[in-house]
Length: 130
Image (tube, rainbow, N blue to C red):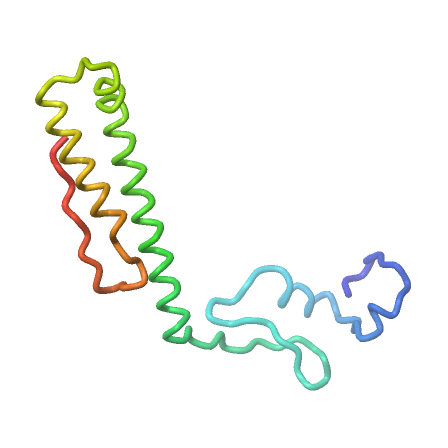
């Protein structure tokens, strides 16, 4: 515990060790790349290599990245088509914009069919022209 720390006197701190300021500064202010602080058998902090991610963890990260990309692409498509959808509802859409809207709606449907869990074998649909 750092000098000057304040805490309630309870059993919750029964295993707290007092460490020198140098040890506190090394282990609790900043980080070391590829390392993490853990307690040794005496309860004092030591640096340990961070274990590599498991294949399952790597896959979960890749799935999340694919989900994020999918959400970003869907948001972009909705922004692009927003005015065309309004024009369509009002009956003032041009034939050219209606064709674009149809192409973009088809793109959105294909995006919604993307299964992010199939990463890295995802076949992303191509964006239509704006």
